[in-house]
Image 1: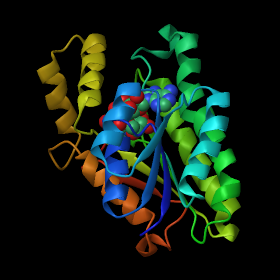
Image 2: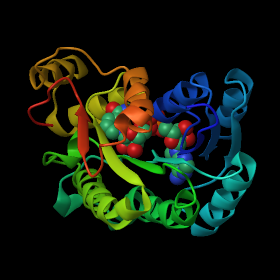
Image 3: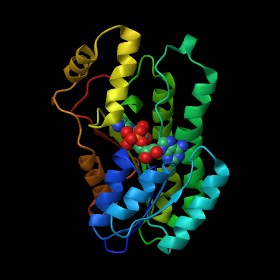
Length: 253
Ligand SMILES: NC(=O)c1ccc[n+]([C@@H]2O[C@H](COP(=O)([O-])OP(=O)(O)OC[C@H]3O[C@@H](n4cnc5c(N)ncnc54)[C@H](O)[C@@H]3O)[C@@H](O)[C@H]2O)c1
């Protein structure tokens, strides 16, 4: 793990930040990008050795600059974690604003594609390149009123499986992590979105969410980070092209 060189997109908060912390704790060299200036400053202060820059994953020229900067700062690249992903609004398809649809596709799919295509030449030079794409339980089931989110998270599965086949010969492994209901502010927003559409209370929505799971708690982001570290490790060296749910056995969204 020492000196593993890791780039994490959208790592100033939430799951990405937990992943940055976990890789740093294992002695990896970590580079993070995000749109949140204050979050990036806090990350650099609080997680020793992490390097970071501002980059909007929705903007191709930002990504082109950022990947070069990251590779220079890290001295190469072994692990890319495509964590950036936005949720979009909660509404049925016929009422879905097409601008909102395009915004989500731009980050979740186009952004992930652009970071990846620019990172591949550097990962090919690594002795053990790894790509991890952050999908979701919404990339395993349909998700009423969250069509663009579900569509893009399923899209990342196709991207993961295709990349694994394209890059396996170069010794690069590619997997997707599919978190379920994760502890943090975002899950609260999900419940609020559901309550708005259903007319139920937040408490009722929280209970309904737990009813879909065999294990009745929210996922700890640190456990998602541990899974990412494992997938990038020597112990994960036979795992590629896989979708790994971490969702307390959710049966539907
Ligand atoms: N939280 C969950 O319940 C959950 C569940 C399943 C999958 N996921 C996926 O995990 C990933 C991280 O989710 P999270 O809940 O930690 O996210 P979050 O909403 O907490 O945001 C994490 C970071 O993304 C940054 N960000 C947002 N838009 C960006 C952009 N255009 N460019 C660069 N950075 C940007 C934010 O500033 C923030 O620091 C996403 O791909 C999400 O879809 C999350």
